[in-house]
Image 1: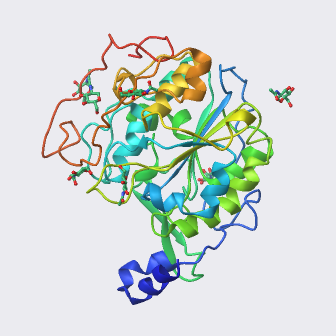
Image 2: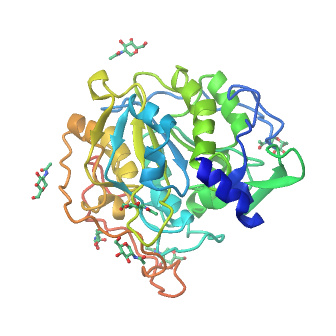
Image 3: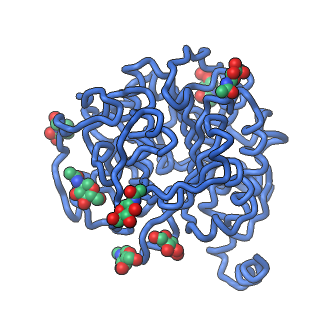
Length: 378
Ligand SMILES: *[C@@H]1O[C@H](CO)[C@@H](O)[C@H](O)[C@H]1NC(C)=O
Ligand SMILES: *[C@@H]1O[C@H](CO)[C@@H](O)[C@H](O)[C@H]1NC(C)=O
Ligand SMILES: *[C@@H]1O[C@H](CO)[C@@H](O)[C@H](O)[C@H]1NC(C)=O
Ligand SMILES: *[C@@H]1O[C@H](CO)[C@@H](O)[C@H](O)[C@H]1NC(C)=O
Ligand SMILES: *[C@@H]1O[C@H](CO)[C@@H](O)[C@H](O)[C@H]1NC(C)=O
Ligand SMILES: *[C@@H]1O[C@H](CO)[C@@H](O)[C@H](O)[C@H]1NC(C)=O
Ligand SMILES: *[C@@H]1O[C@H](CO)[C@@H](O)[C@H](O)[C@H]1NC(C)=O
């Protein structure tokens, strides 16, 4: 990346963030840090494990704004790929960031094409409703979230990378569930938005839930930085986690992905890897070229645990293939999608969150067939 480093030095200060060198937010990913404003008050209760057909825990880790080719060129990603399954035909749903996270929780992005603060009506269901209906524990770990009740747009705290001033490390736009009032308005659910000091406590107590979403802060996730910075973060945080049985055991499936790629002029392919002990030795280092999207994270979880569904894009057979590793165990039949839909569109899709193409809040399609065989949640 020598040329990039030289180039960055010549660019105006708006681009200076990308030249930051990795600084670890704590002395170790297993140790709480004063760089996170929130202190952990308690750990989650130990989960009662609900058995799934292919895995008992699903962990999503979302990084930011990187092209498939850029991630592929990183030796860290290449090393991780040898331990997992590369999903070589996985696409994001739209641009910019926020609608992708919203889609991964609720099965639609409702026309959204901005990163502003939106509250989605309480009658719109999410993955949380489906998981809770089967008593499957969940939590969303947002690295620099200041407190478990914070619902603001962003939060700045001590700039631990430069050592001086403050930096806006937390952004609500990267939190998949908080914008849904069906989650935000229920104190027990809001409290399951936890920061990385809570994470450290939950990990140590072996109380990580069965479904968890991990959002690294805005520098660790490559948003304000580069693939090199994120690779350093993965070596600092994820690599030791993979070796920790409280995070990863032989019933854990991990998805490492990116919210979107970095150019909207071409279709929206993102680098995605399946990792974790649930991957059989014979599949490690292989590639799965089935067409997947962020909606596949919903259908895969539904199929694994026999859940109900949302009756939205999570049941659209074109965009919701179940990860083959799981489909082969549950008997789910995927669709052979040969014409990949263009998901580099933004702002053109009709919906209640698109002021330039307004549509209604529609009810879920109750006639939809759920990947897990359950019924549409209303
Ligand atoms: C811990 O509890 C204190 C006092 O109730 C609260 O102010 C703080 O936000 C809590 N910490 C987190 C991480 O939520
Ligand atoms: C998974 O780990 C458990 C607990 O260590 C062990 O009992 C079981 O045999 C392992 N299963 C496989 C398929 O490795
Ligand atoms: C989306 O990608 C396609 C195919 O690469 C391209 O032809 C099209 O112009 C892009 N759309 C936008 C809005 O940039
Ligand atoms: C976005 O994904 C497409 C694949 O559809 C890839 O060709 C392209 O390289 C990616 N983005 C950019 C900026 O190149
Ligand atoms: C299913 O997804 C495809 C590809 O995005 C889209 O063209 C189609 O309209 C969707 N179907 C429904 C019922 O939403
Ligand atoms: C998908 O369809 C294409 C085109 O018909 C075909 O070449 C390919 O073998 C099919 N793949 C699978 C996995 O069925
Ligand atoms: C859900 O609530 C919104 C906003 O209050 C309302 O516009 C919409 O009609 C409701 N949808 C259903 C299916 O009840």
